[in-house]
Picture 1: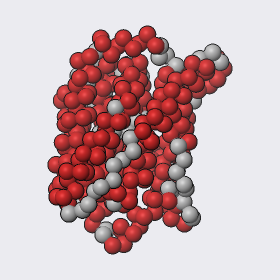
Picture 2 (picture 1 turned 60 degrees about the vertical axis):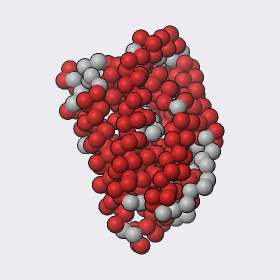
Picture 3 (picture 1 turned 60 degrees about the horizontal axis):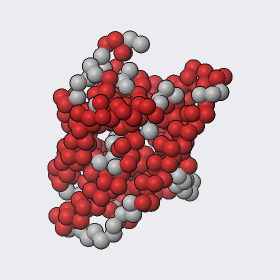
Picture 4 (picture 1 turned 90 degrees about the vertical axis):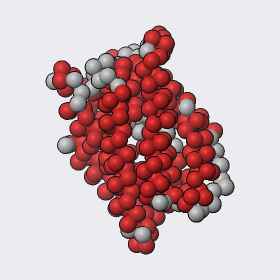
Length: 317
């Protein structure tokens, strides 16, 4: 409940701040901040030798690829077509092809899953960002006609993928190697990790919901308020489908499959919001709606899953 309160408070205060000021201008430093505060603390026990886990658990890797790049995009397309809005459908599809994210290592660690394998999955999914953006481009190209809109602007893949890998993988990994040799700092971070992650989540949400582009949502509410309700229902149904399918496909008693499970249930919302912010003119401002609501649904759902559906011996830790 504490984390849910932090999420709602950060989102509401951020939006109010942006609505009453000029709002924030997006900076990639927020991705670096997320990498250092949410991902880096999970890497203290990771060793390069753990790369062999990819081969050892290739069956789990194949499962994850099947879920994240085939099943979830299919869910997004079906739900999106029902909404009959190009922006909402595009936002939902973008969420469906971006696995993991800044908080995925938090949930992997909290549920007692294999953090080394989880980090490898995070790295692999980030490498596949190029594929994710290509899938979004192909979807928009062939679906625009159904929605009666024109799509003729290809997303720049290199603009996002290189920066994301650097800010969320390379730098956090290097920083974790350095901190491991500074025992007092390592101990301090480990002892206060929960508070660090909660404060980090609040700051990130406050910043993202306070972005200038987020304030255009007020215009949607004034002229098409029904899109808010449609978007929320679409996102809620999408996450319910994710949960039930993932719970059915993955064996939650396996630390490796539990890590893969979180990489399906947890979507990379920060990156999705970044991409949608730069692409809103192409897909429509309503593209932001499902991503905004995804924060409201994903984090509380993750809290519930962590408490009720993880192995009981893990929850007692």
